[in-house]
Length: 418
Figure 1 (cartoon, rainbow, N blue to C red):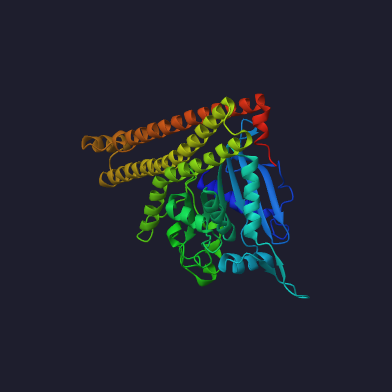
Figure 2: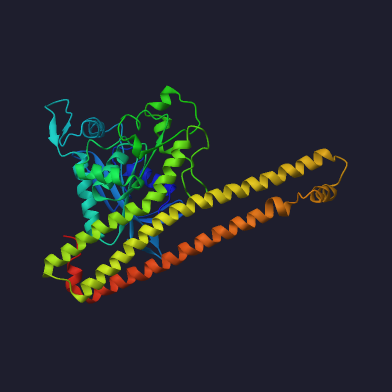
């Protein structure tokens, strides 16, 4: 499963698809393999629509030299300030919900083109059709997160993004209802001092608004540092976004914890809706389900449910691992303070004598630091063992699906991209 830090970096790199962007990278093409946070990812597909300025890409992690297409992230690029089409989208699509985009032309009348929201939806549909057995999530930054939120709501997917204005003006009634009924599926991290991400008053119930404990200079608030992806900090071990422990962030900490609890139900609801679609698709092709089709559907459902459980368990484990590591660091600091205090109180004592004196009152490195560290590392190892077992099972189920499709050509044809 993807971490917050990986979503953050994917949201950054999708900007580089834009030829107008200062970091434009022409090597970012379909099939390219890139490294993010020490893990390789393959770009499954890209989309650059010059008519409306939308860029998007779909990526999957590389496992054992091959793209693991059971887990796919669709990322949307945010606003490029040098692209008038992006700015027009911010105003007309995100702001006003227009189903047309009027491009500005100094030498002629404005031209109406399809909005980025429509192109974003078409790209998402193409990825869904190419990878029907994948658990798909979305991400983005700024305008990109608004599009990613919108696409996730319409497709009943998980969304993890950054500093995105609420996408309600683009969403259908069904999309709004899905979001309202499944709030745990949306992790839109917003900086408290970001005036762009917080531009819209509506939709705050879907945002995790965080005070990063920086001074709120106006220059940084209006599209500056507080709107930047680089402002966010992540746990070095787990990749989870760090929420500073302060009074303002009590709501953010509670909101994310509630999301983590609700996430499994949301993903299972999403799985149920997709399985209904697959069953109807197969029934239409032949009126009923063959034995292989029934086995196939059971396997796909098992894979998607397992992915759902892994997604939720992984979020919980990351939070727990981050907490345990902080507790270990706290215990180590406590021991260092105790040792320094002992040396201060007994300046004429050697270090072994100080250690003996501390131990005589029940304060030792073993009790204060080593034992808590061993307990915490043991729990973390247990978490990783469970995750490894789930990964093995997922590989086996996916392998059985591929085997079934390889021997039943008629069934395989039902899931070839149109």
